[in-house]
Amino acid sequence: MKAFVIYSILGILLVSAKPLATIYKTQSSKVAFSSEAPMEIIKAESNKMVGLINTEKKSFAFQVSVISFQGFNSDLQREHFNENYMESTKYPKLKFVGKIIDEVDFNKSFTQEVNIEGVLNVHGVEKPRKLKATLKKTGGKISVVCDFQVTLIDHNISIPTIVNQKLAKVISIKVSADLVPK
Image (cartoon, rainbow, N blue to C red):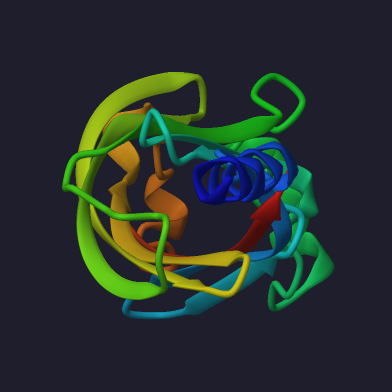
């Protein structure tokens, strides 16, 4: 009788237990870039990045629309960014797809710096990247922070001689996102 009660309770617990989420989607995000050249500093950001993390496969995919960046020094600067450099009509999205390399226990709360590998697609040019990111899990939310640099020439973005001193050859990127179970 005792065994029956114990097995009955275990059965009820197993049936009623919710499986842990394996797919997390962006709830909020921010992608910021800065170009610090001798004659001008250009900064812009977007809060329109979308993405997913699959905790079971340790994979991720993020993308942001190029035209969603705001905060330029002027409307003309934003227009040049979209039309002349990023060619946002031809290459409308920036994408990063990859895997978390390090072991991470997503079943508990943590803060951990991890190595990630993936393919960064900027201006239609895909480049393999190995980066460091900070993951934090509290409650049901995963937060991601990643800072890295993009060299314009690596993605076939040329700088005309006339603005050579106004646009950095290497752009600093800061990404942050909060993700919740899908």
